[in-house]
Image 1 (tube, rainbow, N blue to C red):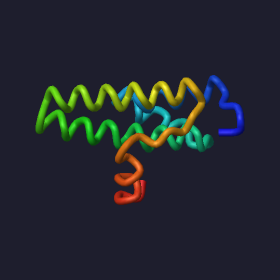
Image 2 (spheres, rainbow, N blue to C red; image 1 turned 135 degrees about the vertical axis):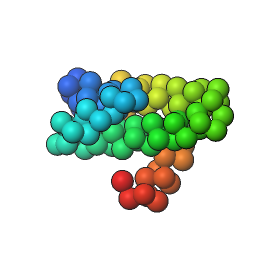
Image 3 (cartoon, rainbow, N blue to C red; image 1 turned 90 degrees about the vertical axis):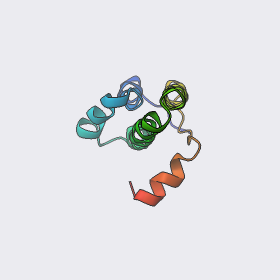
Length: 95
């Protein structure tokens, strides 16, 4: 990404990967494309993680944790990194 991402945007975006906190930027920070990108991904991580946790609890927790961690690292670096499979899901549900 060529533009500098503010610390404020990083903070809002980080909430997207803290599971239920994903709803905070969804409701209060809609003016930043960076925040929207990570919020949409955070919603998929939350939903997919919950489904996996119901089917395979240990695997679900580990996958959700790793995806959230990767998302948080991308936010910290100011990057818009597409998590594996998330773009496909976002296209299917038109989120």
